[in-house]
Length: 355
Image (cartoon, rainbow, N blue to C red):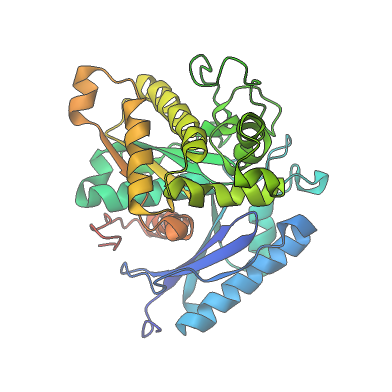
């Protein structure tokens, strides 16, 4: 599976439970076709997590048969919020809840561990970058998009002219912590949803797996105690809900309908800030049967309020290669950094290959 002496970059996607790795050649070929995961060990603290990332790096090189001396850079993404240089937010986050993570410079720690340049992006930005380049192909550098990535938390990214908007502190596109209108979104007697970050009524407090477990499912199961999920442990019930949604279960569709409306309101806000060409939805909520994910995306689009002129040019789409988007996106970011250093640039071809 190697690449006959062609230099590469490695993409490492760090998550709350797993690390996924990929390899991208400098001439634009991904050498890993699917997921290549190992446990991320983030719950054991920063040092254990960095060692897990190093194992993922070694593992993907062994899997592809690429010698280490051909690696020019490593792309790393983690769940946000974090700075542009990979310092985890001092406020903590859904995935990095231990105090030791707060203010931890994960990019520098991995760079020292591997002895290679490490380029950082948060996972939402990485997936957003991948979705943008694959969707627009040769036109990517002349287009804009916003992405919402629904997972344990809610990530996202803003891409303008083919590049992620990072912001002054590197925290642009943290859509999970944008407050959204709750009127008409939650039921009259439904408690205002609270996010793990402490905010009430931000997008992540509704549109995330954590929101299902903490906020949405307890309310709906209290109204329907006869539902089979009422007998399940809360974490398990939250993870099983999507399967019920795929089968058309009314309670599950109520929960996911609230999530879709939340994303629609989030995209309405984005439309008035950036007026993008495309709106992408990714993450676990759409890693589902085609009928369900099409229903969910249509519900998001329906609840996104756009002007007539915007509706005429806007596209709503799913993030492609959903499980692989983070690793592939951050690999693209690493390759862009390598090319920038060499003063050479090239667009991404349709289908995910680089020119």
